Length: 231
Image 1: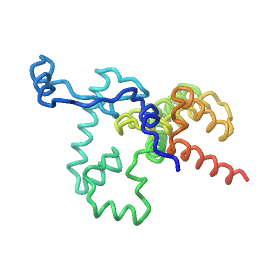
Image 2: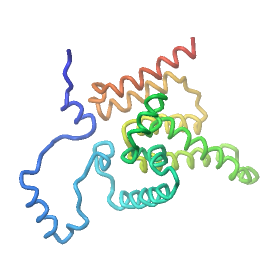
Image 3: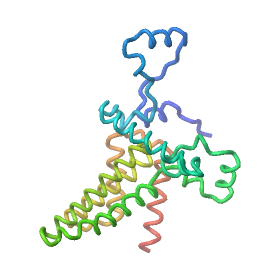
Image 4: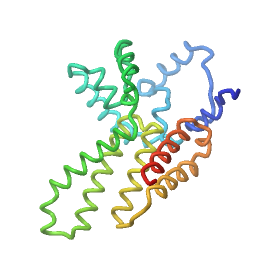
């Protein structure tokens, strides 16, 4: 029976080293004495995007926007559910609600992934196609399509960042961007070719993903669905 490879799991998520705090009190004192200590914090997995930390100013803007959205969702009646469904924040979900999602087989809705990215992109694309339709009187249809696709991709990318930019959201966003690129260029590409291209792209930047069950199962499930649909 194969054991869980913790080192491979860490490497696949961009962590190259681990450590622990011997004296927590000394660390707290260091942060308090540092002139920028009030703005310091330990980086977590949510701060790491594809193995590198994002630009501080851009990260701060995204954090402010996320906090604003969180406050708006907290004002709603079922705030815990909205936080989980929109931003993937599951900390406020009660045990009773967890059991309900498990019994109905809808736990995957609480994890921001391809479904959420696709819905955001589709709604944005539909809205832009209506709002920008008057531009057809001034510009060519190809430019009109490009503006709609670019706007939809930008909103989907921003939503992925707000939702934590986890591995599932990266996969979904990569698929969306590659599909939009083909549409913008007017190229017809087979779905299987698109799927293999996305998998190869992720493995090129992070070969350790091949050891992750979520990566294999995700692409494997889509490949099976494509095979069934085309047969």
